[in-house]
Image (cartoon, one colour):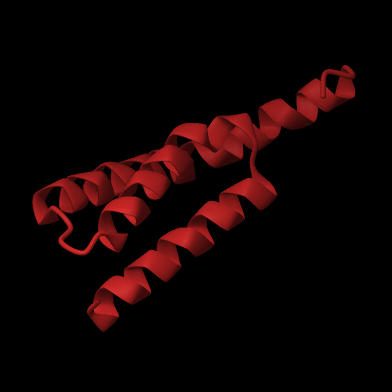
Length: 85
């Protein structure tokens, strides 16, 4: 397995762990994309087109979450004020 693929697999595994540690329901779709990409990259002969598509989708999702995260944090704070954890 090429060093680049090992690095990619490790980075995806790290991202999955970070999502598991810091987020719950709101990141399940991104986590699923990372997990699918990790499994594809770990294959002896990964499908490069599929892997690129998964990573592109994940990249767009990350950008969306990054833009919406401040708003989501605000909603969570208000929910906690009303005891809706």
